Image 1 (cartoon, helix red, strand yellow):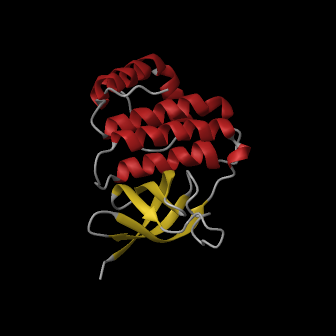
Image 2 (cartoon, helix red, strand yellow):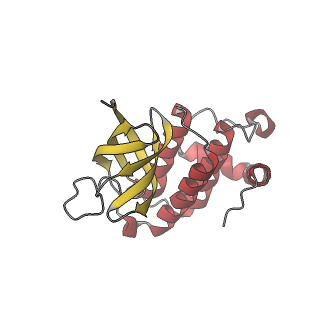
Image 3 (cartoon, helix red, strand yellow):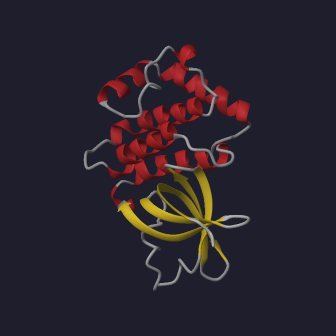
Length: 198
């Protein structure tokens, strides 16, 4: 008998597998990055399919098998209307892709989870018009992702942006003031990881 785990997760991506399954990259509150198969989720009758749309925030039931994870259930905590904020969704998609490529193995990281949840809210779920701030929010989030994974030093940048996970007006102002330094650090870190973002 396998143990079932309950945790909140952001759906970073999903790819089709077999006739009706999908394999998801989930960034979870309790286990970090988890890749899990959801059986028959592409069928019309699946109750999980809407809970596991890309960039959704969901509470998921996970079962760890001998070799991999399986999604045993999911309920939405917050879905998004993709068509309402395409630029924000595209920015978050780039962040999700970066996290899926950079995070190796399962390891709980509360700071990274909160960073992604807050960025998701600011970029794709906010009811306010944040379109002018989207590039700055993306820069802050990418810098925080790289910081928490050890690619950027907070001391080198002399910033308070890594002491919290919100995207308040003060954070946006600070990021704008340090924009060139942040971008240089991000680009250097991405070169170090040998990742080229397109």
